[in-house]
Length: 74
Image (cartoon, rainbow, N blue to C red):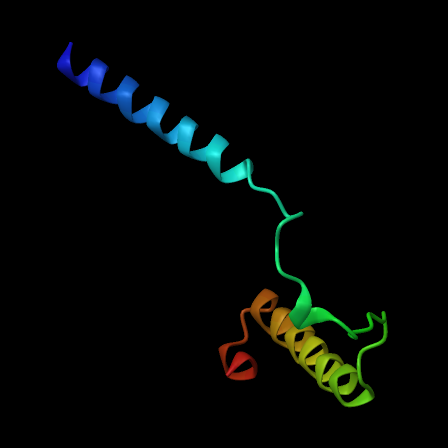
């Protein structure tokens, strides 16, 4: 019985904490550090090339794992 009460209390506490965490307001956040910033959907060319290399390498490594080729994975 004590275990059930403890579990119930813990569960209700976690639920309450979760509700409180979701109930915060963004309207009173200070945005002065973000003034003058512009958002674009284009990443710098250098970053795009680096990301393409990482993606290509990960595909090669995946294929080596699928083939169970430890030498190629290394």
